Amino acid sequence: MLEHYFDCPHCWESQLKMIDPSVGFQEFIEDCEVCCNPIQFQIGVSYNEVSEFSAEPIGQ
Image 1 (tube, helix red, strand yellow):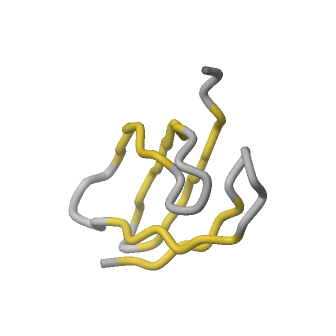
Image 2: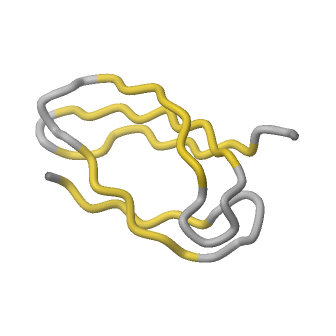
């Protein structure tokens, strides 16, 4: 697993996301662990490193 820190686009709290390096491109929605608002993640992994990372807010 790869570790990647990011700031929640809703509450701006720094958080850790664990990323499976065996999947080259991942797109999913998860709730923030702090404020519980939904975040859409788009993550690219290349050569066992995070090459792309996007954490966008989803309006409610």
